[in-house]
Length: 129
Image (tube, rainbow, N blue to C red; front, side, top):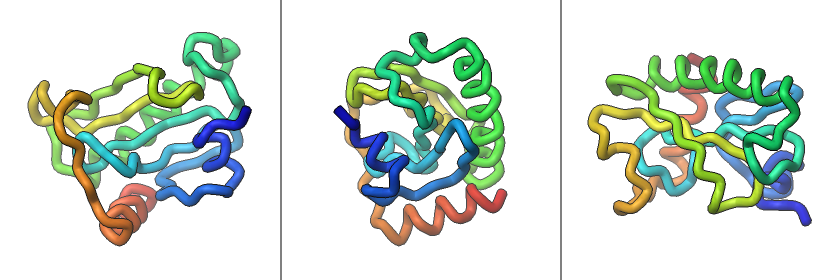
């Protein structure tokens, strides 16, 4: 069964894309834990990150590093943290989160609620970085 991420990849559900290639897509989380919170997903349907084929597992890290550098140029932060949880959506994904404090990567606190215009502006800035 296609996941919400598969529908985003297919263009059935809109997203705020920040980077894309033939194997991966990066887009802003619509309920971010911090400004610039970005999801990186493979375009193949695999539930668990470590079940990705070896070449995908290596390439997703390089793709995420490229996206993290773009986020860091746009969103003021000390570094970009990464979280791989995989329980919310049964499609392998990474969270790239701008950090200034360790608590910035907490998924248990309140989420931000940016508007679509704010997300669109931020996505365009990251994509252009």
